[in-house]
Image (cartoon, rainbow over all chains, first blue to last red; front, side, top):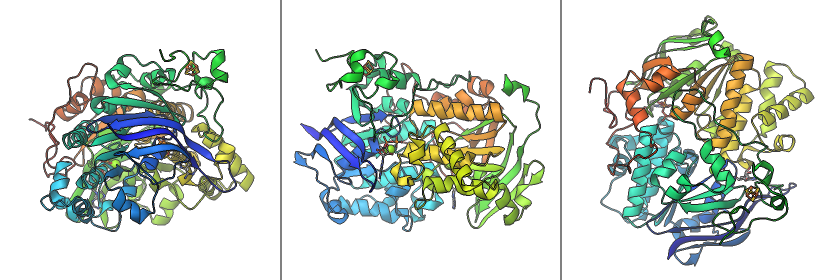
Length: 304
Length: 294
Ligand SMILES: Nc1ncnc2c1ncn2[C@@H]1O[C@H](COP(=O)(O)OP(=O)(O)OP(=O)(O)O)[C@@H](O)[C@H]1O
Ligand SMILES: Nc1ncnc2c1ncn2[C@@H]1O[C@H](COP(=O)(O)OP(=O)(O)OP(=O)(O)O)[C@@H](O)[C@H]1O
Ligand code: SF4
Ligand SMILES: [Mg+2]
Ligand SMILES: [Mg+2]
């Protein structure tokens, strides 16, 4: 059974006096216990909004989110803490995960207390993510960007979640530390039977730790599949463009290809296939009818 | 290529023997870096090695209680010796920074239009309408969709990656000579990243901007940097032309960074958690990578 199931999720951001921004426009996704799912996609396509809806931090405008068999409904912040400590999120901006006015050790200890863990110390958690235990005495601003991210991860892991969501959790670490910390997150999640939804722009790290990949474009999941398969044979033209744009550290000074055309505005999405204005292989049907099917939402790959 | 023509151009910014300490803690232990107009100098290195601190020092934005030594010469003036007042006139106008955390670059309560135009009106003495038009142009340049409407929105109404591009637009607002970009593309997906890298490259090639690009992504480094420096524990370990450093690294730490990249056909990751103390303070025993001589 799925630990987390997201079906046709719609989330709108509303600002008075402006058209609503449909950041998530009918996205479906699932994460099983002990599974790592990598969520990738263009900046602004709605990954963080989807993650926040899963945590109950923003209300769904349509569709359903269920976690351990029950629905996730947005609750007041204080009630959320008790009801949903089993979902922990490491936010994209580490300052959003950490309170600037409290020592990091105290914040990690809160997580341990939530989980009823009296054995592990805050310092011990810091050591697990590769920081000296003594740093527990410091405040968040006394750390470098990468160190802050490690602390946010330690705090989330301390609460022993059954679903861990990492929104760009390791973007500030150097290449070797990224591989280490991502692998650590994977191992801790998988060993304790938790699921991990890992949002990242770093495709090489996603490839390293994810069992499955979901590719998102403008509010929808456009391709899902086992990591190795997507890597070997990306089928959606957007996925293909994404994989092509990864710069190689070959020292040759080659600038990677950008996608042609403008980044679409989610307040005014194109009709038909949302990717059609930028798709190099678009056909007539693409501008008219939305390819509303999976696992590859593209008229070139209709379901069998 | 333009980049090559400028190889011998005079440096616009040189950092010489820069030291920074806070309390007992020596964060920078003698950093040397040279930035030349029209060239991108890439700065890589371990997390916590002092990359951000080097950039902050160049802008006179060190944290409270930090002591700096050495020299930072911008067109011959030593920035470490300038008064706050003189620094204020230079900051944003001649040298600008894009911060690692876009949250740090942007004021949450002001529209992005206000933040874009404020410096232009102050430093360049542009009128309101003129500044606004220029701001909309800049937002388009960094690929914000619907720039004419976006300009009146607040930072929280944009995604993380868009906020980072807006921060880049703000840094470029007054046409600085030197741009310090601290991990400017880590919050971006690779296709949008490609756009920002092309933008940075063209600003160098067309306008002669000198860029210090802090990035841990060696692929990004390889795509745009002309020179590459690698830092560890408050020191620059290795500096050289991009092709040389990335293809024939001299220092074992650089070699280890390149080897750490998951590549085509690489085996599954090791199960070992990181050893204690990676990112540790200088001199406190760092991560699992080889050190000099080991
Ligand atoms: N509070 C808000 N009000 C209005 N629009 C918003 C708000 N938050 C996000 N948006 C918009 O919703 C869309 C999706 O944003 P989201 O942060 O989910 O993207 P993302 O995929 O996480 O991007 P990134 O990779 O850059 O972090 C964007 O167009 C963004 O501008
Ligand atoms: N305000 C502060 N007080 C004390 N120490 C600090 C402060 N800010 C940073 N440091 C320390 O200075 C060192 C260098 O930090 P810096 O932010 O320059 O690292 P960095 O190379 O940019 O790392 P990252 O890649 O993780 O961003 C780190 O060990 C950090 O813990
Ligand atoms: S449906 Fe058409 S426009 Fe959309 S990705 Fe497929 S080919 Fe391209
Ligand atoms: Mg996001
Ligand atoms: Mg930094």
